[in-house]
Image 1 (spheres, rainbow, N blue to C red):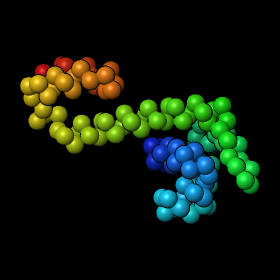
Image 2: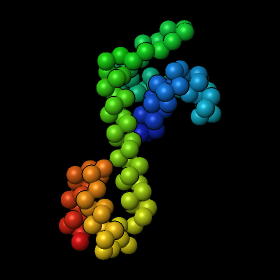
Image 3: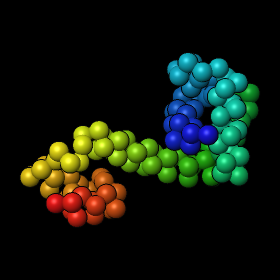
Image 4: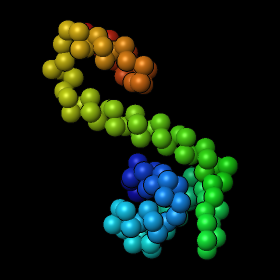
Length: 116
């Protein structure tokens, strides 16, 4: 299971207000979205959504996961951008700016400062 993909899907479900709407936007069947949500709930061992035929709502665990997933996916995007940029090609002021960036995880800022 690609946990980051399923976290992104979970956030899309929450943003769109339903499994079918998220599936339509992503080109996935409702059954596929439901299966991936079930896999995510199984992975965490907790129900993430209260589901009825007309609406969804977040459980306490779901609210916690929304907050954490947003942070985690943002950091994953930043890491991917950094890797694609090529850390070895960064020099001078750009490296200093990246090393001091507050949006980077602390381990990444430490690694960048060591590599100077």
